[in-house]
Image (cartoon, rainbow, N blue to C red; front, side):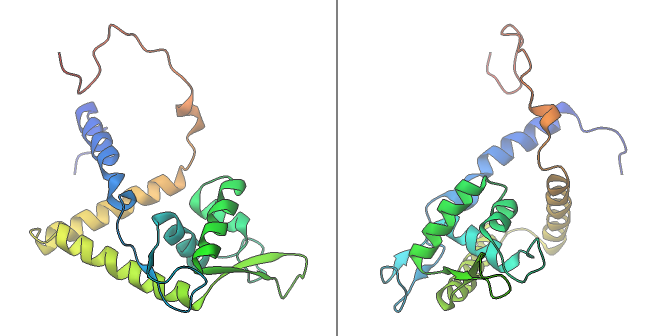
Length: 185
């Protein structure tokens, strides 16, 4: 295993691939459909932001140990501002997959809970993602998939451990005469 720093060309390839991969989960696809009995339209497709809110509600430990997930918890899980999380939760409420409830432990607080429809959608979306990944990786052997899974998990952990690299976000002057990687001549 090499111990040196990654080459700029390799980092450029990773950067380019990640930019192309943004479409992986954001392209319009049927992540699931809200079904009959929901407060939403029957058979209405659900967008990825609603699925992300649902995932956050189902997989976030409350920050205050009260047992309820708040909009603030959702915001932290999704790494968005509280106002954005509130709008996303409102959209998920309209879709019928989550509901706002008064906290049993503290009546002044509101918590977000998954509905029956939300649990159904969660299962549908999870199965959709697995089918899609199976199709994408169909010609990979088990070792390649295992190595990819391990590397991607390690990368995700590094991103989670360094969520806001503010020291790297400062604007740096760019020399317009300098050739940028990947630019055509």
